[in-house]
Length: 278
Image (cartoon, rainbow, N blue to C red; front, top):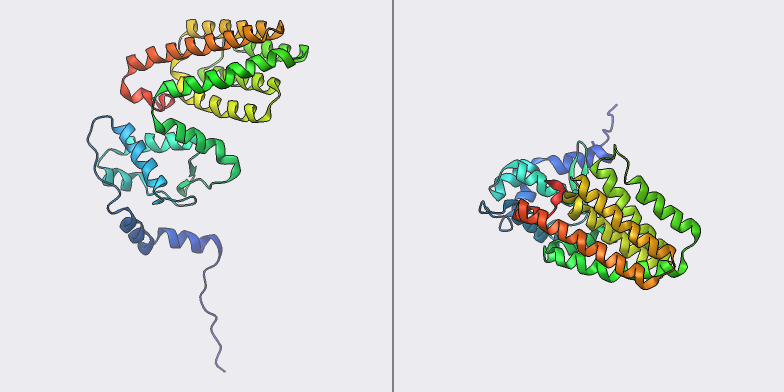
């Protein structure tokens, strides 16, 4: 009696893993990259690598869900060291554009609605590479949020703002925790303002701030100045003084941006993009 053999069909994740790691897939990836990636000169490497990767995504060479080539492959094609590629990819991971999966590699994030703010942060950061854009956006949005908060705040709102600002003074707080509480402070003001869209925009802006501004928080003096400026904002909000709150917020943003500008001047061109990486 002759037994009928079942066809050998791969199913599930194992099949997908073999498909994206086999010679045919790698050959297809290599052909896709031909003409898109060229060696880059040594000056301002990180900035140029970041821009080049961004262009590949915007041109559709790499689409949402695509597996990014390995660090070694990209390093060879760009003509740079693996450490430069690693830092560039890390920047996109921070922005939510690329997802790093342990044991699988790096993938372009899907364009789902919850990533809209990530896409906005990415586009803003890569467009002009100029701190002035972020400062202008902050002044427009955050001063209005402070103005609105001064007319809608409750005693509990004011207490919450003072608590967040006070926790920034903890002696054992590290740079990351300080930055997180700083972001929380500004987002809370947007929440008190009572406009959901402004709150979402403020969250996006604070995510950008979290990338640009950590360079300025190494010194205790700067931490103290930040908290003092926050206090002036809260005092005006507590006093139901809309214009005073807006003015205090604008002064805080201006002073903070000036501190960042001085830091960037001392650290060179690479610090102008993704300073948190360095």
